Length: 371
Ligand code: PLP
Image (cartoon, rainbow, N blue to C red; front, side):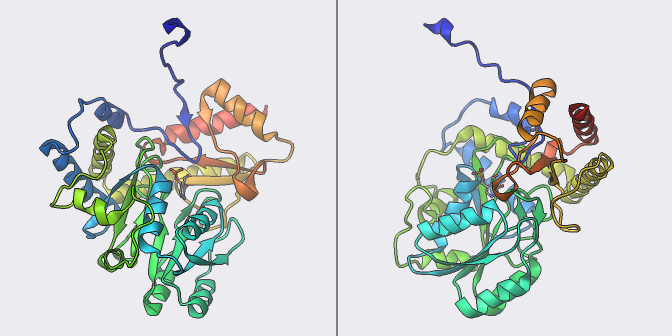
């Protein structure tokens, strides 16, 4: 019986798609450390470290800054189920799959959603958001900072000013931006944001960092209705992360270790150096792709440093080429998602994976795949 199940030996893939990216080896080592209890003073100190290191990466002083148990989508749900009550008006900006997902999540939380659409591969124009905000007068506006389905980096400052003027909350998805490109929660006036560990933080999937400012926190604490999700209810979870240390659910201990280590790596490198590295390697990759005849998919000047998208060249077969890269070189790249399915490839250079060596390895492998 036992012999039917061989020892687990996953291949050593180079994960150069839309995520997960490879975890930093330091993070994997931290995960192998012995378990302590979730109320052990040593673990409580790790939680405190994670809160302060997350404040550093989010560039915020927000007290309510912590990591939800679950992947990036748990972060998305956390924001909507806690801020939205049935019947609330919400504006969601959609120019890709993750904006669409926010619409679904907001509706499930009982919101009356108005969508601001933009063509995929383009940013959302602030003027369109202004029109919607003026006519709907929403409780909140939600937008994706780094749209992983298209490779777009969304500018946020103008949209934040519109929200401030209309006195509505601004919610931002930072899943593919946090730790790879500037995310300035306080300076840009973002009221609530969420991310995931498996992209530019170079940690396995499993936690969703979130941050809420005092305005957003007051909205949560003044709710008329109970939060629809027991598991993601911040009115309770804030008392585990805060002074009270009330048990809510058992924290994923090893992921807590992992988060602390990946954030320590970022702190040691420094945000500016990290962002410069992502930018440099993305520019090198784009130059290489263009030299090979690729045409980039995302709007010029608005391309993400952590994820580059390109049209699949004519005559090149999508699935079999990706399979070739995986089987021959152990390299994973991403196929298109939504409108880009079968037409676009997504190349991630995230966190630990954003290196000159990986740029050259990827370009060489792509070259070989076309010969
Ligand atoms: N938002 C964005 C922009 C993403 O890229 C992703 C995942 O790729 C998510 C949300 C959802 O995160 P997860 O798949 O970790 O639940």
